[in-house]
Image 1 (cartoon, rainbow, N blue to C red):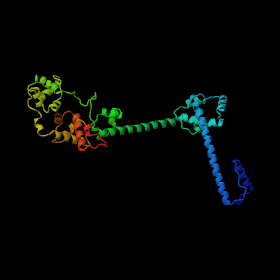
Image 2 (cartoon, helix red, strand yellow; image 1 turned 90 degrees about the horizontal axis):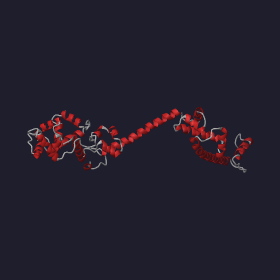
Image 3 (cartoon, rainbow, N blue to C red; image 1 turned 60 degrees about the vertical axis):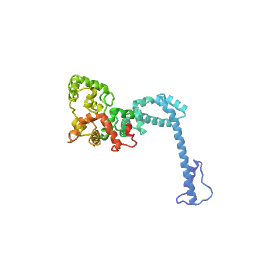
Image 4 (cartoon, rainbow, N blue to C red; image 1 turned 30 degrees about the vertical axis):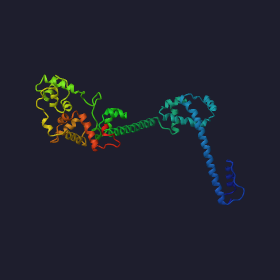
Length: 369
C-alpha cells in the first residue's frame, strides 16, 4: 500500500488475478523491495507456467495433426459438416483446433506442389476455398511454389555440377595422360561432359582415343607381319623406298602399317627393309637423324605441352612447329617416336619424372601412368 496511486481497488485487482493462477500475496507486512522481488518471482513463475501450457498444447496439436494428416492426404476425411463433427469428436479434436490444423495441412499441401484443385478435393472444399484458407494462413501461392521449386532445382543442379567438376578436375590432375573414357570410368561422369569441366591447362594433357576405345588408331603390327608387308611391297616397287611404300598404301595395293610405325618398331626404314630382305633405296630421314636425338625430340614435345597456348592435339603441335624456324618437323617427330598418343604419353611421363608437371598432390608414380 506504500506504492503511489496504488489503492485498495488496485490491490483487489492484483489479488483476483493471482487467485486465478492459484497464488496469493503474503499477509505479513514486507518492505517495498521485498514485495517487488516477490512479484517479479511470481511473474517469472507465471511466464514459465504459461510456456509449459503452450508447449503441451503444441505437443497435443502435433499429435492430432499426425492423426489428421494421413486422412487428409488420402481424401478419407469426411467432407460434410455432420460427419466431420462426429469424426472430430471420436478423435477428441475441437472444431477450433480442426480449423487450425486444416489450414496448416492446406499450406503444406500447396507447398508440396499440389494444385488448389487437388488440395480442395482431398478435404472436400472448392478450389477457391482452398485458396482462401492458404492465403489466410500465410501460405505461398501455387505460382510462388512453382518458382521456388524451379529455383531450387537450378541450385541443386549447380551444386551437382560443381561436385562433378571438382571430381573430374581432381582426377585429371592426379592422372595426366588419361583418356576421356578412363576419367569417366574412374569418376562415374559421362565422357561427353568431361571435356567441358576441364580447363585448357588440363585438356592438353589428355590422350585422344578412337571410337572403339583403343589408345592407338592403328592395329598392333607384329615384326613378322611388317616383314611380310614389306616383301609384298617389294614386288611392286624396286627399290622399296618409303615414298613408294606410302604410294602403295594410298592406292590400296597393300594393307600395312604407317611408315612411322615401321620406323618405331625397327629403328629405321633401312633396318626394316634389311630384316625383310628387300632393297630399301635411299633413306628419307638420314639427314635428320644426325641433327636430332630422340631426347631432343621429346624435350621439344614437352616444351610444347607446357606452353599455356597449347591445346595438346597433333594438329596444333604441327601448326606450331611450322611457325618456329629451326624446329624439328612434326613428320620427323612421328617417324622417329611413333604415334602421337604414345609420344604424348611418354612426354607426360618425362615431365612428371623431372618435376616440371606438378599438377596435383598425391599423384601416382610416373611409372604407374
